[in-house]
Amino acid sequence: QVQLVESGGGSVQAGGSLSLSCAASGTISVSYYQSWFRQPPGKEREPVATFYPRTDSAYYAASVKGRFTISRDNAKNALLLQMNSLKPEDTAMYYCAAKPWDGSWYDTQGYDYWGQGTQVTVSS
Image (cartoon, rainbow, N blue to C red):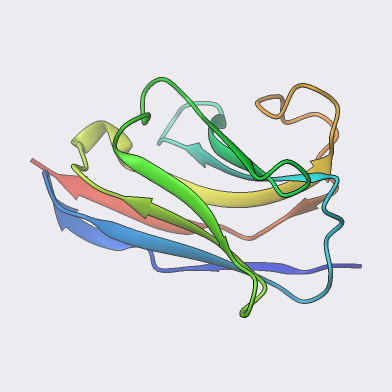
């Protein structure tokens, strides 16, 4: 069983940047989506971005495209999320997760592994 542990959350002013990391305790297949989701206060969990190692592809939610960058640090076996130009509406608990490819990375169904989350707070 792979454990995922997020880090890097914190508080920042609007326009600032944060870098999140998700360390995995074991090997995740290259045929798995490795994704970030977030859950704003009082709202449902929503997709942020995914990285698919088999094709070296990245996909983003429209709300973060152009501001966030997802990548992998293979040496550290970690999934990264660089967040720039942060807005108050980016405030949420951020989770990393992984599931086998099924054509719908944005759907929370089917994710085998979830981290415990890291809080990001953006003030105006």
